[in-house]
Image (cartoon, rainbow, N blue to C red; front, side, top):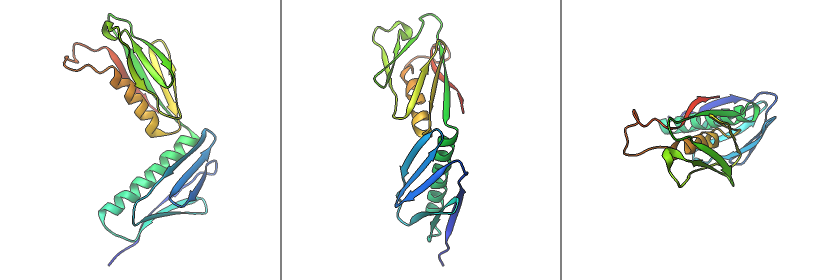
Length: 176
């Protein structure tokens, strides 16, 4: 016997959420974000000040997808109301690392004395603030902010060296 499984996400009054087919849109003081959520057998609708995710199937896979969609919406609501911010520290001992931002790319110069700069892509909707010893990555889309911070950290990843000795690089130290 099949049961209806559902999850309800309450929407705060300062955020406007719209449902158009399989697209969720959230508008808030920090900006607007939209996301397409498509999975056969899972539907969602807006009711008053909440969004209801539901499925008529009782398999674990559908429960998991409903939970994932609810988390995506909660992340969108937090992003448009508060935003996301990652802080990265620049660590070096001998060769001073310098960073430059150009055309949606962060260039890491003088990493271990290398002549060719390493590059990290900045994704859409993400702002990168370069300071002397810090990098601040902020935006409203949690996935894009996290991926941009990861791109910057991975640009300074050393392969084939002992990381206990070669500790230079750019590392994520806090997430908000």
